Length: 244
Image 1: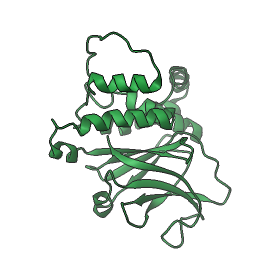
Image 2 (image 1 turned 60 degrees about the vertical axis):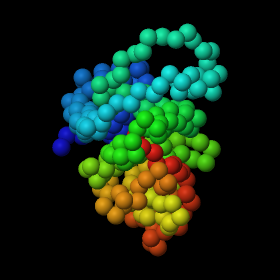
Image 3 (image 1 turned 90 degrees about the vertical axis):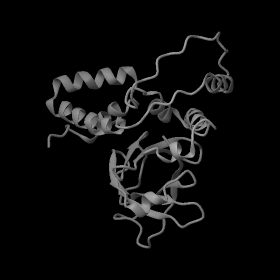
Image 4 (image 1 turned 120 degrees about the vertical axis):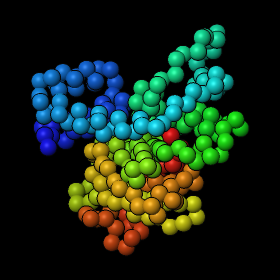
């Protein structure tokens, strides 16, 4: 498999595919891909990998009152009502969620609130919520700064973890991801590289415990992970799991 010249290029290709780069950063990567076939190949691979998330996911358009509340909470002046904007045809076309995830805890929380309000509206049956094949989590420090985003694909029994920032981890230490179900002990999900995208396979037992009452957490452990099956080092970030 062709790979970019370094891990930074690999990370940028993943962020490009997720839609979290700024316009200037996207143009810079596109120019680099035109000049370097290795970067171009990696970019195509990440786009194909992330595009799978669009399958069988219906778009959700929040009602006007949700956006009005977000504007009010952010202190943005209210505008006169406008004609409804076309709803994106697919998850891939709707980059708003991915961009908000990387902006920080406050905007991320508001975006997730908008999605949850629509998801839990009385007009939608409980089976429609249960049938959602995807879940997301913003894994952030205690001060609200996001470090990673996680996307769970229930139908493929997999999860993709992408760094929002590049955390500094001491030499000789590793980051390990944990699932913390409601009122239960942490369950190890695996050691992953903190500064590049990672993909994890999830067992049916793990998927059964991934719901809106569960939390993802990252701890710093010895190489190879915790020797006890429970976090032994500091927990550097946590994030609630939400329906996508």
